[in-house]
Length: 471
Image 1: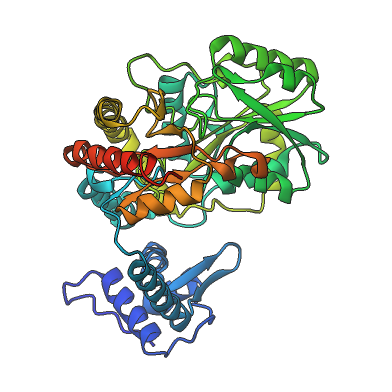
Image 2: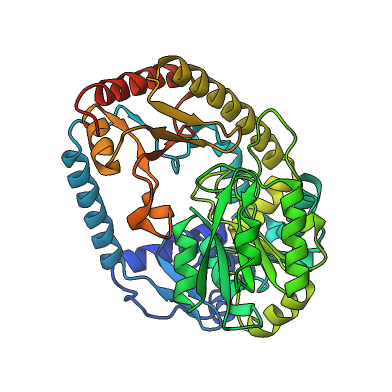
């Protein structure tokens, strides 16, 4: 029996949280054992359902219990979690020790410098989402499309920033881009799809399609988008594109080509999956509107907030055409949103109060300055054998090293000099015949005040290799 002291001055939810947490830590509540239903426990200890709900949400957030939609709450395997953490720490330590010398400057494109994110404000929103009284009414299993308030603010945001035409009921909140893609492939009406993908392009998406048994066709990239002759001559009935800032080439699909693609989709009754990747970061010109804004119902719009905020905010969202909304509602009627309720509530308030737009503007200015520093210094210091592909958008550029016959060799030699660069071979469909001399240079995680020195060291290391033993 749990005793609640209503006169001690300590909030009831804090008392209950401490009792349950201690029982779990002491092993009094065994792994996989079910917690009492919210109403049952609330009646037993004479508190509101909301108080128990709040405590359960906090225990989930801190990893003590897990929520199983439609079933209840269960104690996590803390020994396994602690073992995984220990193993992860050991692996990280071993990897760090093996990296000799350590990288002084890591030009990894995936890295994000999270120091610029307003963590203090975000923590306040998270705390309010869990604790504030107005939120108590909303605690529980979320709508299968996601938090209604979050879908409303995202609807307004994408309409204003990307011209996306939609209503909140067309928006699906997802725990990351890959999970969103899994939803798309589950609700598409045909099962025997042949999907056209950009070549080169993100290999993770190709894997999702191949896992579903889709046929895959390469659509070579040009300097204005995919090769339309390749698309017109293909048997594709679905295409996946990143038109705002193609990965990894950095190409922005032209308006002319966007209209050609939409005409192809209409003519062939095909869907276009538009991953609006990196749309926030375009420098020196006005970003083109989304393809969805030009469309008449054949574009599935996909975007994420992870690249803008931080990878820990695993929030992606879909905007579905009306026919697919109906299919989703039927297939996912017994599902619940994968993103925790309190995360969605906090994010909704964060966006509503204008902090997302402020952060995007701030990061866009910072990244633009970084891009200008990188291009200026690299052009001045790099040997003529190294060519940079100009792409005033995103947070990485491509670099071509003339005469390089082994990506792995150059990467290894740069690492020996304390510089991290990254190859692109894995992004080509035909990897055996992919170019060995094209590399990605990311600058997102490097501090602006350190970038010039980092670029000079990069260029000097590259010059020593190119003019020395070669690669």
